[in-house]
Length: 251
Image (cartoon, rainbow, N blue to C red; front, side, top):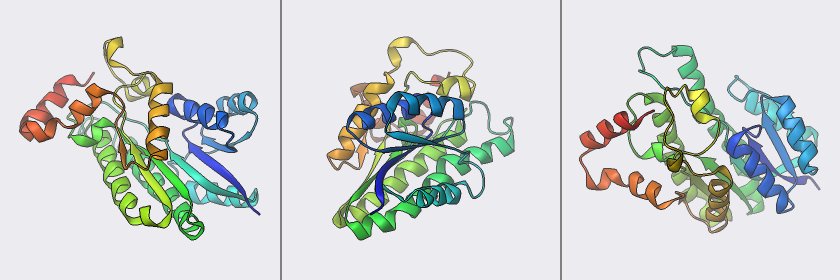
């Protein structure tokens, strides 16, 4: 019989590391995928019941290569954590066009490809789960981070749709929508000024909330009362106000 594994993308930093640690603590066998092999190897050494796959999921054909690697190791995905992704800050017209396309390919394209690759097997077995990491950015447009906010809106909408499609077939699909979290995200995105430390959630608590929501069969998990409130701002204020506020709050 194939070995059941939890596949975590973007596993070399931030939320990905804490997903790996918390799932390993539950006794899951892990496959950790990311670009930075040194970090992956260190995490594998720490956790024990895991192996690393070095690849850039933003590259064409990377999702297929990852699935081929799993098949070669006689592994089937019982849980997919689609965590890989990045953001960029700046005006759309001034940011590098190719880099923004890479963001779309990774945040949306690779995520959808992997979900499409694992879902048929889960449906056939009537068992399995997918956790897609979105963001509170999914709930409004983001001037100054236009493409990033749009990619997370895709992730949220896509996840909700899949949730409805497969929930009667023994499979759970859930979107985790964290707000600002203490990870390397801001550094990679190019934030010019830090947010106050009180704004940030810690990564382990965000991951714990996401896994709890997934186990409860929720379509969406938004950790933190403040994040829940800001995610619903579009229900209470005109969209013109919401998008202006989002632009003002961007670091």
